Image (cartoon, rainbow, N blue to C red; front, side, top):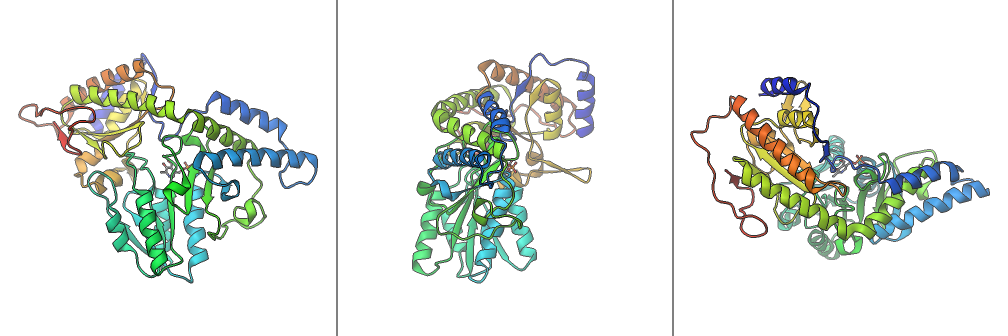
Length: 431
Ligand code: PLP
């Protein structure tokens, strides 16, 4: 399949795409010009070290604190509950390792799910190798974890539940507030040392976030998913929750994250958070409309596809679709030749394509997991982008299916599908 895809890609290599469309905003977002401006100004204006007592240092300190207030406001937290780190991966590492190390005398059991980002999954795997026990709760076929299943996974020695707020591949939104209520009950009944961490990297800037409404104790954020630069993020730690810093060598971030602050990126993250808060409603409405129109057109024009994830409980900007008889990577390469940037959850490991573990966790077969593509929209996409991508997608899918040895249907298998919020059957094959 890959060979066929590459042949097609090579043939097309000489043709310049008519249009370039970036539909990979879940991987990263372009830096907003207003954020770039704040970053650039800060590089020269706030060059002092925030730990220095002189005025240059204090100016940088004030800039960091202003940004901290903005990030805190985005999630409804208090300023001193926000720790700046290098991004989502570090936030997840610090949350899980930091909390588990601080709480190890109370218990050594963690509860998580089968669809977490590798930066959560990997830390849990590493702790398991050091003697911690990890329960990975499966999700239902629409990609949502059942609160009762998490509740029954809790034990007397559980110290941490780490469950993402929104999934990076399929965008499903997990019932964090309900999980927090279950955890609170358990805490009040018998287990004082039980905490809830949520990875909100994909959710920030795409849904309303409030740490009190969510009821979480720790929450991870990353700047580059909300139009700030890469390499900056934050961990929210509720007042009274103890974590052990993982860096040694400085007293920054109240001993919880040693290392001189990345002042300009922090300022940029603060500015991006302010804009995200102010523009949230209009951004959400806008990207949802584009995404829904895109899906309607794809469903109308292309047979043998499956929409992965829940149709309602998901982020507004994301659509994950499996195309039968096609390998996602081949489709991605061919779309790229036409100027369309998307991504696939499949990972290349030792020369073979590993199907996406998230799509596999939904119970999809290997072919569907390999054929899944994530389309993620952003504030700068347009209706023309949607028209162009649908057109290109239809052509490329038809072409790849013609070449595919997997494609042996006797006749097209299309069933009627009602669109919009009415009666699409979740996760059924849309033929
Ligand atoms: N968590 C989720 C859900 C993500 O999607 C990502 C990035 O894709 C991360 C964590 C890691 O964030 P960063 O790229 O800032 O390290």
